Amino acid sequence: MSLNKVQLIGNVGKDPEVRYLDSGVAVATFPLATTDRAYTLANGTQVPERTEWHNIVLWRGLAETAEKYVRKGDKLYIEGKIRSRSYDDQNGIKRYVVEIFGDNMEMLTPRSAQQGAQQSVPSQQPVSTPVQPMQQAPVQDGASDDLPF
Image (cartoon, rainbow, N blue to C red; front, side):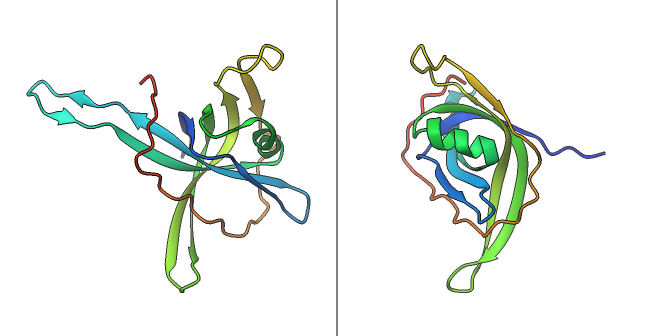
């Protein structure tokens, strides 16, 4: 038995990039930042804040929802699977990418009263459509996220 499941709560690093395959299937990609707060050990050693950037990939209905409602800075809950792949860049150098393929997304940033404070959108079905390599999101140093954990 094996398990590949990821649960993340973080802030969107930039507006989702959405493209449509020839078959009409929507694919959204964006970076999501999760941050571990700084703390001090009992012996006085200070451990600095650490931000991890995750490449999120959403398909079909989730991608269309992200296109309409998700914006840079929004707080999201993403549930999905880790996928890794490699490709050769323009210079023939092999690049490795780790992505989170989202199966479920909850928008945690409060919206206006008519949209509700939280929206949950399950995915429609597993994805088996091949996709062209997408560029890895740039690492964004110096971004400050005030996450409550």
